[in-house]
Structure formats: structure tokens, C-alpha cells
Length: 340
Image 1 (cartoon, rainbow, N blue to C red):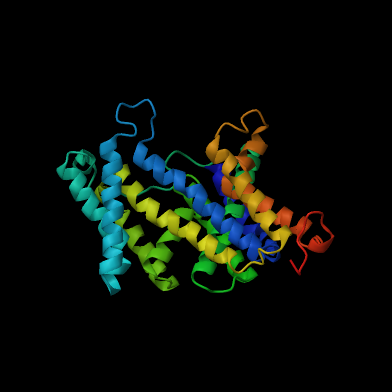
Image 2 (cartoon, rainbow, N blue to C red; image 1 turned 30 degrees about the vertical axis):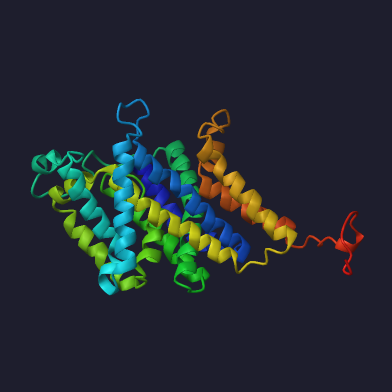
């Protein structure tokens, strides 16, 4: 917890300098990063449906896959048929209806709700005062640098979805929020808090873009946090139900990436190479999670995050290839002439 507090404060302090990275995010990089975020999230939804333990007897159970399909279908029907408020909460309705169906089929377990306390208050420093061990503080700060890169991609994705130009000031405030909440989390006996890319899809699905609504929802969550039974209800939602909703939300993020890429000059060979390589590199830790297992720990921290390594790759390749000369088709062997 001491390391978390230190890393959060460090993140808050350096956020102003980190936000200078924004100039390295032209449309081709922005589109690549958003696409990488969406593609990186898809396995999360799939694992929710399949199950966390491959050795479990119900792993990839057809009933779970069917349940997730039903939830996805419910969301799509509500999104297509309804208008206004009902359409905006299509994901929430899909989760609620899906959970009720799963409970009726015996696929949900709400025993934890009855066992949870009616009221609970988190005590600061419940396990004693924090210890600021130098090596741990340095390691946690490195992790926060990685999450700051992911947060940058998340914020870029949000601004693209809401069609509002990103500024250094906006990014600085977002990174400071990560740092402050991480330090506060250390005080209240928990791990670092960072931006979650999973939430980006909700903006595209609901169309709700107001910061004030988000702030009010944050206050509501803080109040609900005083009632452990509510947390138990949320935790009892079957993972396959979450997976069905996740397919819609995370797919929306990837689609936003494709939309952002449409604004990039992909006819340029350098730009198309930026997209191709950055997406390919980002998918390595997703397809083969142990790919970097023989590398040093600090390398694994960076490279095991598809979003981080994909973003870094896109930025570096854009710097290297943005001024690359375009090939003259007339001078290439076997090329067609303009008169052909």
C-alpha cells in the first residue's frame, strides 16, 4: 500500500510532462490505438463466457455460450426496437434480464448476498501504516507509467467517440485523476485505480457523453459502496451474462477505431504500415500470453499489455515512417502505366 501511495503521487506529479505525448497522436496513431483497445478487450468477453479455469468441467459449456448469445440478442433487440431512454440502457436491461433468466435456469448463485453485511465502512490503513520500501515503490511506479500509456489511449478513444478534440490539459487532468485515485486507494487498503478501457464501449452504446452524469454516477457508486449486499449482487451476476454484454461493448470500441482510421490517410504506404504492425504486435500477448515469459520482468510489464505495446509501436513507427517517400508506380517493374 505504501508503494501504491507513492506511485499514485508520482503519477500525479509527472502527468503534466506525460501529457506532452499528445503531439505523437495523429489520426493514424489514434485510430490504431483505439482499434488495439477494442481487439484487446474481446478476449476478456470471450473468457467471461468460456470461464476462467480451463480445467473446470463447465469450461466452454454450450449452455453458457447460449446464455451469452441470448443476452447479446436481448441487447440488440432493445437497441433496434426501442428509442430514447430504453435504448440508452439497453446494456443494463440486457444484464438484468439475462441475470434473471440465468437464475431461473439455475446458472446464478446469490448466496453471497445473504451472507454479506447490511452496512460496511472501509477503515483507512486497516492493516497498519504504509511502508515505503524503495524497490517496491520503484516497481509500482513503473507499472503506473505503463497504465498511464493505457489511460492515454483510453482518453483518446473517448474523445474520438464524443467527437471532441483532445488537449494536453484534458489529458493531464485525466492522468492526475488516475494518480490521485491510486494514492487514495492505497490509503483505503486497495490496489491502484486506473482507467478501464471496458467502459469506453458504454459511451458508444448509450450515447451519454455528459461528464456531470458520470460524476453523479460516481457519487452513487460511492454511496452504494457503503452497502456490501449491493456489491454482492453485482458480484453474483454470472460471467457468461457479462460476456454477452461485453461482446457488444468491446466490439463498439473496435468499431470506433475503424471509424477513426477512416480519417487517416491510409493510401499512404507509411500509414498503412503503422496500422498493420502496431495491431499485429498488440495481438502477440493476447494470442500467446507466455510469449515474453523469458524476458526480464520490466520488459514483461510493458509487453504483456497489448494496449501499451501496441500504442508504443504505433507512435514509434509513425515517427519513423511519416516522412517516408511514396513509391512512384511508373518506375516500379511490372506496374501498369496510366494509359493501360
